[in-house]
Image (cartoon, rainbow, N blue to C red; front, side, top):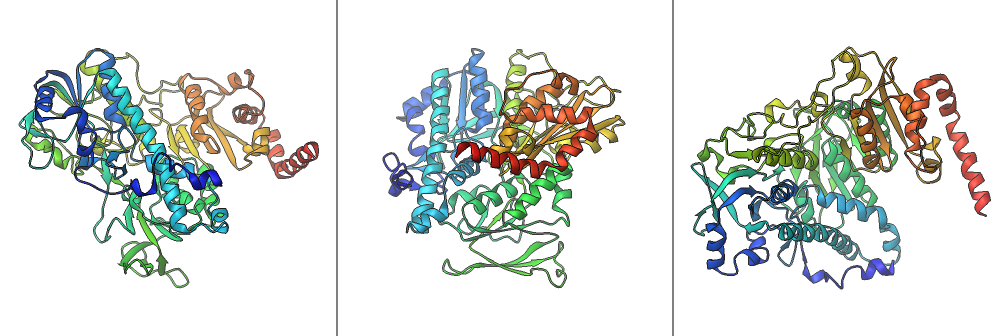
Amino acid sequence: VAGFRSGLRGNYPSSRLHFAFHPRLRLKSAVQAARSNEAALDEALDEEYDLAVVGGGPVGVKSALEAASLGRRVLLIDAPELGQPLAVDGEDLGFGGPTGLFSKALRDVAKTVSISALRQMGLSDNSIWNEVRLQCAQLAAANARNSREELKAAGVVVLCGCARFSGKSLRFSSGIGARAKKVHASKVLLATGSKPFHPPGIPFDGKRILDSDTINLLGFLPCSVAITGSGVVAIEFAKIFRKLGAEVSLLIRSPSPIRALVRTGMDIDVAATLIKDLVSSGIRVEKNCEVVSFDVPDLTKPVQLSLGAPGGSKRPPGTTCLLKVDAYLAAIGREPNVADLEVENAGIDCDKYGNIILSGPTMQTSVSHIYAAGDVVGRPFLASTGVAQGISAVRHMFGCAYGSKVGISANTSGSIEDGSLAASGDAFDPGSIASNPFAFPNSIWSSPEVAYFGLSLPQAQSRGINASESLALYEQCLRGVVFSPLGLLKLVFEKPSGQLLGVHIVGDDACELIHYGMELVRAGRTIYDILSNTYSAVTFHELYQIAARAGVDGKAARRQRAKGPEATKRKRAKLQLTQS
């Protein structure tokens, strides 16, 4: 606790910590390297570049590094007003980081800090929250500085300012009102990311009515929080604030939170385990409702939320119709950052949601020398898929394709199709994993974690595959018994070959474990292959073998799971006796 109280003050005194939007955030620091004077800026823009990357998030940074590794001359332009509102002394800590960077850092801090213990020691909520944000700032700063050092070492030129199209030419200006100058680049990659969707009727103020980006601005430790949404971001923040000691209400439009998760491709047992954990941790799940009005008084009084049924009608008698909370978070989708680019001047086509339309798997737009990747092309709004798209675009534009498909070709009846990460915008199914189940793993950084790859059993059966499933409970392996008994791992496989079609996990380290499962599915491995392998003892990877064995002998597996809780208690008692 003493270490936590002193925290990181040696690096970041509390007086220096500022979380705020600033129109010239990066012009105070990052531009200094590229424009110590006007002549240096002119010199940088007079250069001929093979590629100009617009956007300083993970997609832009990784794409720039990929092009540099191919021996190309690369310019990266990072627009300050499109970055995350997370800064210390004007240094943008969101550079090179995903939009979920703050939530991941906050989750990590929430897992290691006991708010109740700190309160019992007499620390005020303001002191606790300042220290929490301080630790988040250090985690973010480490990533931002590493990204800048990598770009510098690779020889990538970084300019911080605004990029816009004038015709098919890209122009750069160092700030509002500054003279725009032409960028000389053979290829352009747009990777400007996305921003939270703001539906009408929600009075966002960046103080207590927040979205998934401006939550970074929260200046106090709330005692109560209401969150609208049933997706990844909403669930992640619900568990984070509950871990931080807040009373949390999760407001969802669907009458069934489990069905809402299943529609995204999540296995029903995994979804049920996740929702059960939300409820058991004390999170109120208000189903079939939405906020119909807001009363936002001064900071000394709580925000009042009037709840109604979807569409604005009254909720049934006996349900909650009024919530009083310290803060409200809307996590209900994202939209691309394209408006400031003026892409229409270049003739780049966008769909009705503003997503840039791609001409095919090459990630090219309707203008052949201009490419796009990441959130700017629409769903699934994941950093991992965006980086894959960016690298694919770079290797295509310079004729260095890897020569392998994204996806798998299963040896079944042919009903499992290859996936394409270029499917985006209107072309991307709202249940993203349902349209492209083999392109990428899905991960939710909640507590417990959730991850899945490939087909669920209903998805396999809907494709006409003779499939079955088997599962292993975390409490069936020794590491689960000792450290984390809550969770399960499920395998979906074809019968009678046993070829793996999907892996679904909920529990500790699920987001790490899924990559082994992904490789098993991609390689066409079977449950019999898993049984023939040897796994290190006291690891979660033993769950794969337990689940595979259950697939071979389902009756024995069900008997074992039925006595699982009692067996777990006996094992723990034996361990305690041995330790004593």
